[in-house]
Picture 1 (tube, rainbow, N blue to C red):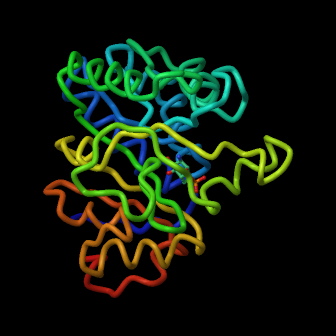
Picture 2: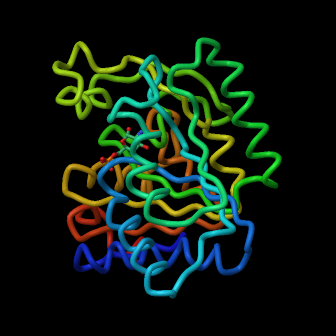
Picture 3: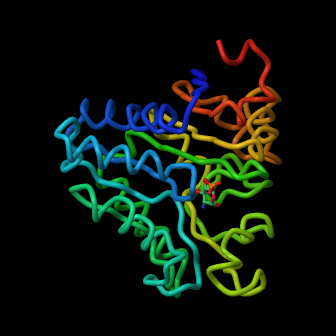
Length: 245
Ligand code: GLP
């Protein structure tokens, strides 16, 4: 495991973008599993800048959103379909950008379709993840089996909370999501975990320094042979010195 503690938002974004660009440069038709949320916003802005300035080319890359809300029209501003369209696809030429269908009536069939698309792309070359305050990765909430696959899941109140404003109230926020499973995420030969802010410090410390447990999904990542963790000082504040070295 490689843990990088960054000193500024700019360095955080640069390190994260560097991790993506390295994979894309090494494989023209790269398949990338990418997260939504506020943490990777700098990463996507950084990728857009690099592409604009001719330092990177993602036109051969296929993006797969690692999760999506469920039970919401695809064009709702809270969906990852909207997020990836605005933050990435509109700014960066890509080969393709796939997001699960948030309005799919048959969630299992939709997950199957998505899994087949990943398979057809030759599997994910890199998975980038954020982390929830409760240690969730993608929409794999605490208790998710380490051998879980793409599926419909129930969201916890803390995961629904950030969506409350966009839906008018906490009760109106979507109760379900579609997510790649933990086994799907671990299959990627490289994983990049991003965390910023003091509210993530406890989850980060548990994930990296305590034994892996399904109670804290991100802790499974310590078993991955090629994990890079990019943190800001606040998210790293609970780590012992040894895991930063
Ligand atoms: C949501 C997303 C996750 C993301 C997490 C953290 O639950 N589905 O993929 O990692 O939020 O988001 P943020 O970066 O905004 O803290």
